[in-house]
Image (cartoon, rainbow, N blue to C red):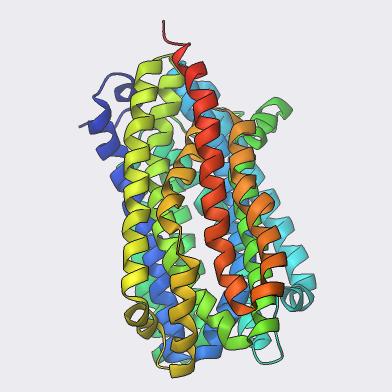
Length: 448
């Protein structure tokens, strides 16, 4: 099927889901697989404390990605809606604004983080033993941070503008470069954890070059055109409004990881942080598969909502809920049945493995519900319903998980830390069901 924004309004929904979601799933899955492989390289080539250092750096790295995804997701939703309204020039203006915002915010983030890096890492739970690993990794990541913002921000716009395969190819090439360079830098050049970070940044620079080449072509529906780089408050406001749900979710995830690390350091020590790094890598892999699926449905839902093809929007929702739930059910089964095998992939440390096995089973006890909650939140974001999406994003992280992390360890110690996640997953899924029952009739009423 030819990649074209017009097909979003006429092609069969299941064909569009294959065309748009599979490339996005491949991209996010490949990214998650790289993160897992990167941790395996670091764990086997540098040591168990290096895994803990990487876990400490994860919230800061995630926050950098959050800014890029924040701008990119907000702009891509508006690009899809503008294309549905046949406003190609308006779609291109969102592209230019997103590019400028990513450069400005990326530069500011780099400066602030460099100045306060050690202090921030200590706040995030670093010890004297783990700080050098976290610092070495983040210094290299921050040096190329602007490219991180541009890569995550503009790749999503490429996908939303009718080029899911090309966006997937950029992601795969970038990850391929990363996977080739990381072991060379770690094992051959002996650069340690800095080598893993350098491989990541060099790969993202190559991705940015490919994305820019696409948007500079005159035959691209959405492209860099004269005047598109001018910052207009109305355009910025729309990007911020829509993208804020994603941003808030990733920021809260970073905050949650920070609290996890602090609690684990208090109740168990540095190796427990490493165990959480292993567990979180696996859980994130399956969540990223769901988010990849959501990236694929976003332009389909956004385009048809803009064109007022509401029945097609409802069909997208039904398929998405079934697929998202199936993905996290599979993740739940694997992590409940094979926690020891998974842990041994990352490390040979018996002590670290022994902490990881019960932690993985407890942490993922309600993981089978997560796919449903993530799909519902992302679906309303695709329709431009920022307030609904933000509420659902906040519910699991801020309203439920953070309080659970602050309260349960006081009663149950290390076990209380692990069971905070399933407690939040269960209640947030119930909230998603309630919100969907309220909003679904409103959506059906828009059918002509």
